[in-house]
Image 1 (cartoon, rainbow, N blue to C red):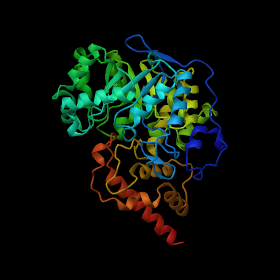
Image 2 (cartoon, rainbow, N blue to C red):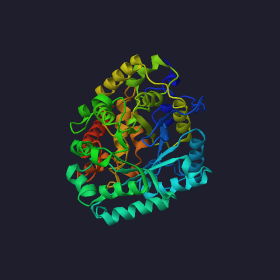
Image 3 (cartoon, one colour):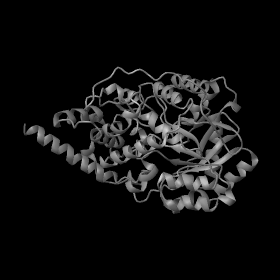
Image 4 (spheres, rainbow, N blue to C red):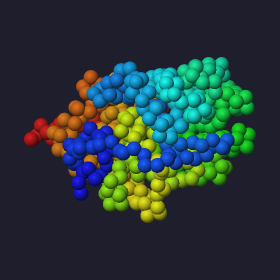
Length: 451
């Protein structure tokens, strides 16, 4: 089986072409062959199945503004010219849902997305904007601070209303935190008033973490009439989220609970932070025989779009070629057959057997007070685990040095302070994982020294 038949998109993105696979001459996906698949929101508005997640906006150094450049931390400016062209391309090809947050991209996402949408030449009614009440810090809990955040969002996004407004990550920090952020301060009732006044057209929430927060929202649907809910859904989390972490709820349960209440679903993490798009022999072994030309990313998007109550699938696309491929996949989307869904379940089980770290590269754990590239280190370990053949000690150390430049500080610099762990939506015991990686790197060094 030739490498280029496994995942064209993953080879393009991967910095690990040397681990078990040959480098490939990759071309971006062709333009869409038909019209974008559309779904309908509760107000009768047509919504593109593919949505743009503005969490990883491109920077002029080739990285993205939520984290890392090709070589090191990206403190570089957002590439507004490139973003403008990407947003225009998406609008031209039927993508009309744009998701952002005051917390994304060093706080710059809303402003830069607002500029790009304004520069596109499209009228405000041609697209939908989703943003969030991202009041994560205790000093942002008071209602007046929430109101300030909303008004700033309107200004940055150059609009006088928000199509989809979300309570951001309601389960993070447990139910007590959820209550302080949205209930005790009156913020949720205020959001409902904004919807009644038309300043918010649709009100929803994104869910990570404590199941009690999700169930509270479901139990109070009669009062708040949720217009949508954003959940983490992909073919691994569909049946196995709770298996990965006891605190989680399987996406299948979340989807079916929402569908029973006729609440449309917005999907985040369809590619598990890129883990379902990068080359992975365990996944390719199950999926490539079904369609040798399909990328792993295409399989992941097709899975999500197969379910009819999915309103839109958010993808945080930094590179233009990823945008082109994902647009093509959804124009129109081909739902998965029963046999294909069975193959995706086998692929999910194969991935879980590799015992990878459930890091989605969201960067919520950053910045580390001691300068570690936490997601970079965790992602490096996952890429080694998912390679077709394991690298030698020398090759693994070389790749570690290349992936985590010395100035970013590696796993051996972790003090175990634990300040990162509470911010992780996946509830990873980050200090424990870093300690294990440090021990593994030491073993590689010893093995190499013994040669």
